[in-house]
Image (cartoon, rainbow, N blue to C red):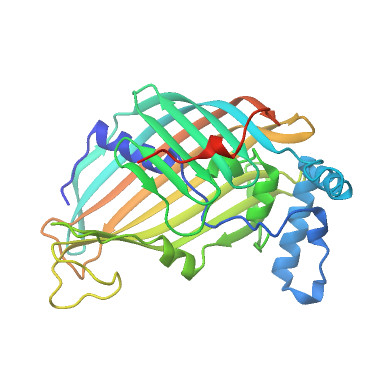
Length: 366
C-alpha cells in the first residue's frame, strides 16, 4: 500500500469515520418500559444488575422514565402515549483533520517517511436527522467541501452513501446511528445499554462517572465481514472487535462521554480468498493490514425539550491507526495514524412531526 498523504484522501477518510458511524450492537427491542427493570437480583450477575440500576437512573434524569411509565399506564387506550413517535433534528458540524503521520518500518526500526502533516483541513457542514422510534432513521449531512453523506434505516436494512464508496448496505445486525445515541434519544441509548456490564468508575473532566460496557458478539462480528468479491484484486474485511463504553455522571445521571473501539483486518490478494482466517499455499496474499478506529465523544449542554433532557452539543475525537501483519511482508510496509475532530451543535429538535411515515425511510432505488 503506497504512502499517500493528501488533502482529498484525508477528507474521504474523515467522512468514512465521522460521517455516519454506527454503534457496535443492535438495540434490545425487548426493553420497552420501566417495568423491564423489575428483575430478581439473584438471576443476573452483579455487574449486570448494577448496570441496569445506572440505566434506570439515566432514564429518570432525562425524564424518559416518567414518560415510559405513563405510556405503560395508558397502553390499552393510547399505545404510543408517554413517549414520542418520531423526532426531527437539525444541527451543524465542524470537522477537522488534525494530524496525519505515516512511518516506514525496517525490521524493528521506525523512521519518518512522509512526515507529519501540520496542514489542517477544516470543513463545516449541517445535518438533518429524522427518526421514527425505535429503528427507522434518516440522515443527510452536507459539508462546505461539496461532499454529502446520506444514510438511513427502514427497520430492516441499514444503508449509506458516501462520495468515496457510493451506495453500501450494512451487513450484520441492524445497529443504531451513533449520532442518535449521543444524547438525542434517551430511550434508544438505554436500549443499547440494556445488557451492559459495569466496569467501575472513572473521572471525565470534573465529573465522576460510572462506566458501562457493551460489545459485539463473535457471531455479530462474523456477520459484518464482507468480501472477497470476484475481481482482479479482491479485498476481504474482518471485524475482529467492536466495544462501546458509556460514562454516566454520578451526580446528574446523564450520559457525558462515549468511547468505542473497532479493530478490523483487511486482506488484499490476487486470487479468490475463500476464508478470511485460512490462508493456503495457493492463495496469493499481497497485503494484510490491521485497522483500529477509536472514537471518543464528550456530550453536554443538556436542555429540556418537551419533557426530555436532550444534549445540544458535543465534541468527538477519532483516531485511525493502521499497521501491517508482518507474516505477509509488503515491499514497503507502513504504519498510518490519523486523528480527526468533530464539533457538533443541535440547532432545533422537535417531536411527533405530522405526516412522517415508514415510507419516509425507504432506501434509495438501485
